[in-house]
Image 1 (cartoon, rainbow, N blue to C red):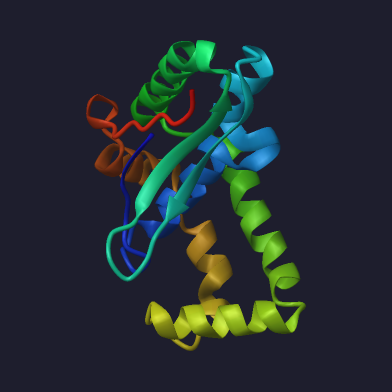
Image 2 (spheres, rainbow, N blue to C red):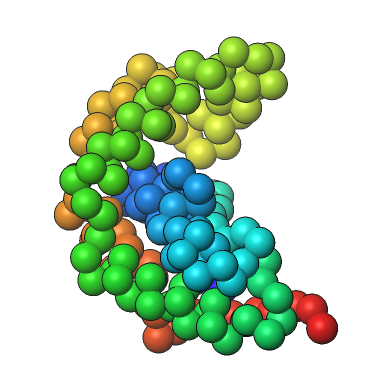
Length: 167
């Protein structure tokens, strides 16, 4: 299930990324995983992901569901997306997501592969050679309103692209 998402260089990319972390990445696969997998037991996995590039990317929700539970799982995901677009994230969720982003940056730069990926991203997306010096302030400057605005801009629960594969 998905929608068209932001470009990597979009001013609202960081807000969308932090929102995605709350929606479907952080802590047992975020809100989506919490509702579909943990509370309802309908999925083997359920998460969201944001794929941004030089052009518009995608904002997706993926779930591994027993075919007999597809309808129920889709309904729960759509309901959670509607809640996300209506209310955004809590102060605590945003703070946790921001701390995670800032805390994991040094770990991502510990390997040669991590360093090469960081340099490649700076050049590919024209982020500026000082991007990682500005990173913490970029992350911390995102507000709950920024996340809500990005969610409302990109996620329209009435216009989701849905693909189901399997038996």
